[in-house]
Image (cartoon, rainbow, N blue to C red; front, side):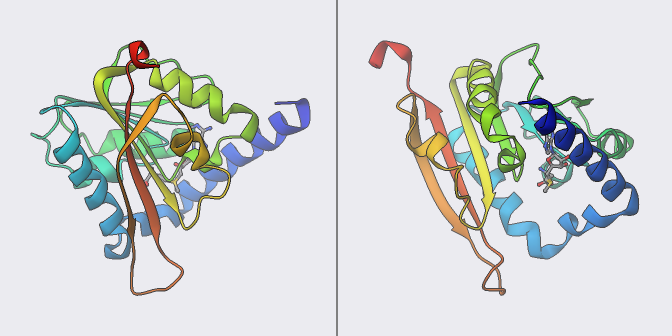
Amino acid sequence: MNLLDKFHHWRRKRRWDKQYKSGRWESLQSEKEAGRYHTIISFIAQYAPSNPSILDIGCGDGVLTQRMDGDSYSHFTGVDFSKVSIDKAKKKRFPNSEFITADAITYKPERKFDVIVFNEAFYYIHDSEKANVLNRMLNHLNDNGILIISIYREGTGCWEYFKEDPKLEELDFTTVTTDEELRYWKIGCYKPILSSKW
Ligand SMILES: C[S@@+](CC[C@H](N)C(=O)[O-])C[C@H]1O[C@@H](n2cnc3c(N)ncnc32)[C@H](O)[C@@H]1O
């Protein structure tokens, strides 16, 4: 990112903090959004190793963790660059979880995970950093691990990072709709193709 991009990035981070402080994102807990979380959770149940470790990039205040059964994962790490959202997630005291204030652009996981989720977060990453962030996260995915991406509406400029990556195989892809025509999400589930195959 150039200096101007870095400035805008910093301003966006401050805006997220303000919005979490004002309660604007409490709407993510509404039933209108539930189908998206349920689909992610069912992909985890269907395609991930049992009792997986999970990394949620751009986790906000932990709505995905909240919607999961605490017994269904061995470990949950949530990362978000909004400290306000992370403080809110920490207050919920989820079992076997840690929540870290960090920017996806620079965050280096300290371990590998069975599941890595970008739940309505990938499109916020600056275009010049998307490939770097994705590759760094893929390096922290276990061999039999999966990657889950949820993107609001069409996700122009995002899906090609997953659908056209020869290192990834698509396991599932679905559209979650609601009673509002323009409120829908596309959700994909991918696994890395082991390097010996390409
Ligand atoms: C629409 S919210 C989704 C929150 C959560 N994933 C959910 O669906 O409940 C997008 C989140 O991405 C976070 N975010 C955006 N850019 C980020 C970045 N570069 N690093 C970490 N988090 C980021 C925001 O702070 C915000 O919490």
